Amino acid sequence: MELLQYGTAGFRTKASVLPYVFYRVGLLASLRSKSKGGQSIGLMITASHNPEQDNGIKLIDPSGEMLEQSWEVVATQLVQSNNDQVRDYVESKLKEVDKSVPSTVMIGYDTRPSSKPLLEAALDGLHVFGTNVINYTLVTTPMLHFFVFNHNVNKQVYEEKEYFEHYGYAYQSYKKYLPSEYKSYSNEIAFDGANGVGGLKIKNLQNVVKPDLNIEVFNQDVSTQGKLNFQCGADFVKTRKTVPSGDMLRSSHSKYLSVDGDADRIIYWYPNSDNSVNLLDGDRIAVLLAMYINELLVKCNLKDSVQMKVIQTAYTNGNCTKYIKDNLGIDVIFTSTGVKYLHHEALKYDIGVYFEANGHGTVLFSQKLKTLLAQENTEVSKQFLNFIEMTNETVGDSFSIMLLIETVLQAKDLTLAQWYALYHDLANKLSTATVSNRNLIKTINADTEIVEPVGMQDTINKSVAKYKNARSFVRPSGTEDIVRVYVEAETNEDVKALTEEVQQIVN
Ligand code: NG1
Ligand code: ZN
Image (cartoon, rainbow, N blue to C red; front, side, top):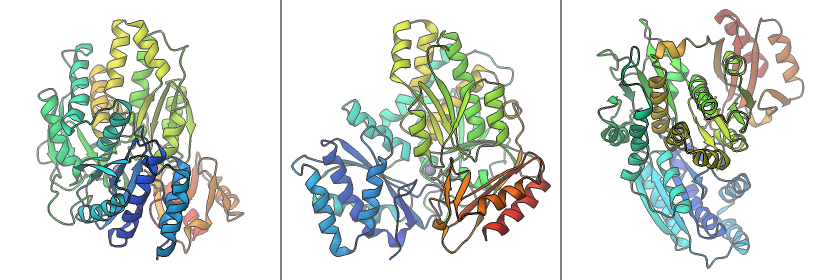
């Protein structure tokens, strides 16, 4: 039996091995709800940007956030137990929780063919504890986070329609703060739905924001097997830097965007004549949003009363970090890879703009800031609160982020090319290496330094030192059985040569 770990994205692997995992996660979610005084827990069934034959499951904690880390250990132990130990393990855990507390679990799943059958396994586990199940069926990951948050915090069972109205109306209402005519901005968007749930659900948002946003949806085939994430979607466009399939260029649009298989990531892009694309990825989204929010802060005279940071990972392009620090004058903090680390760091500040380069991220605003803005009660403080309303603060949400980006592009009257021109990326390459046991590699300092195997980092550093403005780091993936090698330098030639050197060191 493969030893599965509750990683950065929950449990994720080939769907065929997952039924027993889902059953146990059903048990676990019931326990988690009971341990949280009966508050609702979310269970999202998805493997995000992974191939269609994979699947996965992750828990959402009561305030809509990802599962607390101490329970990740519990989850891993439960799933790694032998069949005959499962009962003992659950019973030992049950001693710590009050069995009589009723439990509630909210469920959602993506469009994978395996999602519904796997749901049955999770339901079997949930029924063991008589858990009350609220099944949202087909939803994006961020939608389920929104439902869990609102159930526990606002004591309401929201319907899907209310999610779209919440963000759609916030977007509509912000119009009064924006110019009425544009020289550069265009409201036309070509939307790549990765042939997943995002392509289906974007239409509900479109119905609310029409005609202010004109969204043409591509890659929305969720019934043909094998199409999910195949040569399309945010991960494909980000890693290949090419136009996705799906005839998106058949008529010319001024803006293109791709989401991933569960619609929590988003990447804007525009094509070059050779089918390569210019990427407006998570780095550039962070720049755009941080720049605008900083301006709102200045207008509200709050720059000195609140603390704002941008949170990134080592995969962020060095020139992006430099631009945020030097041109925007905002501090940058680095964390390990995986949005949960960025999210927890962002919670420490009044404003935490966090994005992974792959387009996964959001903005968090503190209660202190919201109270200050409410007390001020000026036009600009109301405007700021309206901007916050448009933000899904529970998790990265491609729909909410799209509305925020469209808002800022209007406010600043920008085309994608003008946004892209804010800074130039250093040349870079993300490659993978396959090793016999990826867990032998251990890193510290936000993944930038290898401590095991001893000596490997020194060898890499010696190679890096040969190239101008170069940087490289190596870490084991948390979602696949591979090692990732990142290299950045002044020129593509240097990146290629250094990648080869580092690959040899790792292999
Ligand atoms: P791994 O496989 O651990 O590199 C990938 C992404 C993470 C995060 C997770 C969760 C890269 C380099 N890594 O993790 O940023 O998004 O998936 O989906 O993009
Ligand atoms: Zn995703």
